[in-house]
Amino acid sequence: MTAFLNIFILIPIIGFIISLIVPKAKENTLSWVAFFTVGVHAVSFLAFTFYWLFNGHPILNIKDVSLYQTVGYDFFLDFYFDKIAAVYLFVGSFLTFLVTIYSRYYMHREGGYKRFFNSILFFYLGYTITVLSGNLETLFMGWEILGVSSFLLIAFYRDRYLPVKNAVKVFSVYRIGDIGIILAMWMTHNLWHENITFLKLNNADLVHEHLQSHSTIGVLISLMIVISAAAKSAQLPFSSWLPRAMEGPTPSSAIFYGSLSVHIGVFLLLRTFPFWENQLSVRIVIGVLGFLTMFITSGIARVQSSVKSQIAYASASQIGLIFIEVACGFENLALLHFAGNAFLRSYQLLVSPSVVTYLIREQFYNFSPHQKSIEYLLPPKMRNAVYVLCLKEWNLDSLMYRLLWNPLKWAGKKLDFLNMNRVLLFFIPAYVAGWFCWIYEKMIPEYIHHYLPVFFSFIGLIMVLKSFTERKKSRMSWVLVMLNHFWMALAISFNEHFTYLHIVLYLSGIIVAGIVGYICLERLKRLEFAIGLNQFHGHAYKHPKIALVFLIACLGLTGFPITPTFIGEDLVFTHIHEDQALLAFFISLSFVIDGLSIIRIYARVFLGPHAKSVYEMAYRSS
Image 1 (cartoon, one colour):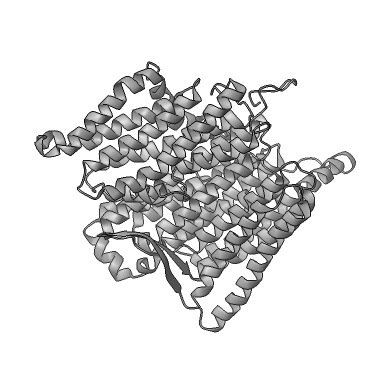
Image 2 (image 1 turned 90 degrees about the vertical axis):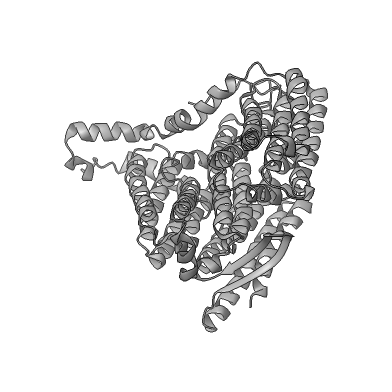
């Protein structure tokens, strides 16, 4: 029976690869590939589900393949199937099947028809991997695919300013969720000394035995999971990204931000529930977070002028209620609520254009005065204050900027003295000196040796901060991201004695992707001359092939699961000890910022309005 889990992963992979091969002019073939892929997947899953239920619905777990194994470490793909996976996969396959049918006609004659169906199938692959994941490593692989496909679909209308701007904004929130998963994996490695599977988490005695003497680490792991779930499911303080994600086509908004992708945070909480169910403080945090989100976003939804924004905030409000249900331990109710909310929001988004038309007609021909609602129970001053706050969306956007991005930009601007010549003259010799210190580390006093990993990781953080705030030279920003990875590898090398293969595995993808990306930027510089980062250039319009190759290089440099760096990142964190919180913080912050910097380079150089357009265009949103 477990062999079917591999088939459920294989079908979306084959469909996605075929869709890449089909020429973009073959609209009918592209739509049929997506339709047939998702249809076969849905039918085969339904048949399997009946067979699974008839045989007593056992929990299935399969260790599929071990990608890298060494002493005390095993990076393997693990797939897991139970009622949570069954419900999520049923809802996902059914809704994706409906949306592919809808999109065949909705997207007809659209310039990015092929890109749309490629991205939908890519998303469906990531969704299936996430739902069937049996450990955090496998889940993170699907999690990353969901993030990239979200970015591509939000920025689908890539010749416009606002979709590209909002795609970068959403991706920046997703990176916060990514780092929560990475830190959770790091701490679970230190807690369990292995890549723990979700099957083992169901063993209450095993979990209690480990958490009894490591309660603080257990709470920290749970909080990292909560942060990741909140970021992915648009809970406070991350709720403002959800309506911004509606810049993509309506079908992608329906399947992503109304139904499936936005509920993945709930899936993460349900899947890890056996780990934190006895941690009362964590359950209170999840419940309070869900309640505040439900209260605030429901008010915001009531004053939105855009129907898609209204549906987005209403969906976030319902997910807040699902968070409360999960915190209370009502697993079956949460699954039923997820299915109902997913179907409702998908339907609302797909019919939203028609609904707006009907409402406009009703406004003219059947006008009725506004009826008093529950808000009128409040005193007038309080009612007006809440109305203004909801109208301003409780300043959630500006709060995120003030607390997260503005401090990073401020720190990066303090590094304006750095240029390419100074980086080459000072930091590369310093890096060589660092390697000499590593070779002769036995001669270094112990009190100095203890601080070297933190020191080198801090230098890497400086590199990527400068890359993130660089406004002029895209090639310099790209090189600084590469140097950041090299500094992190050097920092970890001082931490433990391990084989060169670990560092080679980590840096191999960085080197290849970095060189390919730099060649793309150099080639584009010769063709277009201006590739600065002070504005969007839209060069994907004239150079789609260079844009595609550079996007693949960006994925490789961020540690996306197409290079050994994906395994190397997890391997790097296994060499950070539990008492090295500052080192883990610097490296994790570097991972967050380098992803933002890389996607910013890609967006600024290749997306947005074309720099040589003869038409007027707005460079700022309203």
